[in-house]
Image (tube, rainbow, N blue to C red):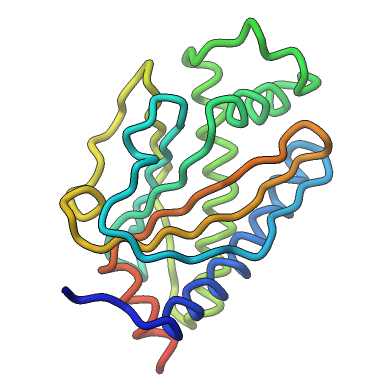
Length: 193
């Protein structure tokens, strides 16, 4: 099976670390809260159980320039509700009555759009290639807005990058990024130039 070496996984981890670190700054400014994302752990998997869990929010990030393909961000539902609550001017604590309605999903999408835009800008700088994304789409157990791309669920290798995400004392959790091997190979090719 076509896969990547430990050294290549380390390169992906470093790229993800820089890009997502910058995204944490963007999230902090949007939420007006101290936000931190730790150094990532990179794994190469054949399939990812997080995609089938119903307590997760999946965010599809399509690349429209620079890279060809899609990656997914995976958040816990509770974390997504806290982020949405803060985006809508709440305190991040009063989320018990919140549901994944259009307003909440819109707030989550916008937060992810801003974060992913920062990631794309960072990626463009690192790879010295103009990189852009389309508007992120959000899946929850309540509403499906996209089909998971085949290359992330058909048994081919997936690169899973796991970060610890903290937002003040409100969130201390994991943020996952799932990259199909095809995008990882494109990043590595650009990095080697």
